[in-house]
Length: 237
Image (cartoon, rainbow, N blue to C red; front, side, top):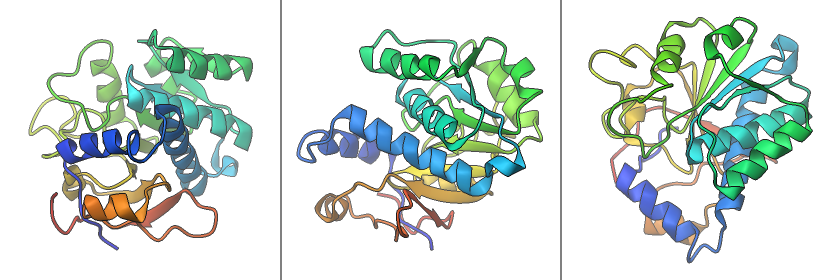
């Protein structure tokens, strides 16, 4: 199943609409996004394949989704570790970090060292709003993700990729193609360049909002908060 893609501009507008006419709070949307990511990890890498999950979190909403996913993974029986070098002072992010600390989730300072004992990595550094250059301390993280043989699940976008055009043509991030991608709400145009298994997460969009933005809501099964879909969008919105 291939779905239509949602441009970065349309995705930003959709988020605003979800929090206005859709009546969702950012807390709810982040919780549902992080829950879907955690379910995808459980689906592709159950605990019996190795329960040490390393989650790399950026300073924005994508990082917040990663923090939520880490909490759920801890409750599923994994042993998550979190690399979160640029902690936000925003109350929401501080509460998400506190919840992990209360669960005795380990926060690590050295991503490369933490990778040595990881069975799976969640890339929640940059999302659909990323543009420009990768700033410190994340260049070394992107380079490590490019080179690792450990399976990586990226949240909404492989970090360093342009939301419309995919990976950089050269340099940092140009060789990064994670094993799994969880597109939140709807796929973005970059999926045309993605070669792994592709999932859509975030089971909360109403038919009216989906119609307004002219995209399909995937056929979620049972209690799943994700659906596996193809990587080729039919047209860009």
